[in-house]
Image (cartoon, rainbow, N blue to C red):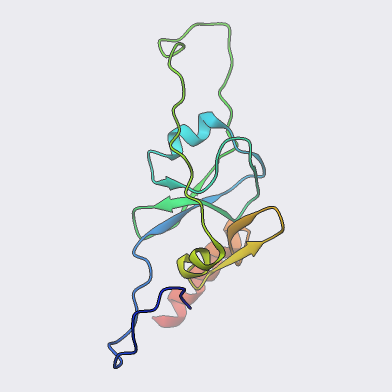
Length: 144
């Protein structure tokens, strides 16, 4: 499905949709700027700070082919000692915004687009990371 159309052509083989993996949330809660600062070094983010996330939600794009479990809710540990990075502010790049059509184009076979009146989210079909890992292992064993 696509919203861009050029012309009809003869069959040219399978269409390659995406060569990248995703950053998948492992925890539930509000995303923190501190955690997103480290995650944006691993890829493009689809969420901003202060957004509610849940386990299995796709929060970003991993440049490598595999999915990477991440924790966007991790807060900075506070203590009474000053650190060398205290004065440094967190600079986050703006999150990637998807339209419904673009989100449908982006997802892989193991992902869903979750559309609500207020949000448009990407998520894994199986939310639990352990169940996803077991299923992937079973599929590999069945192929062998």
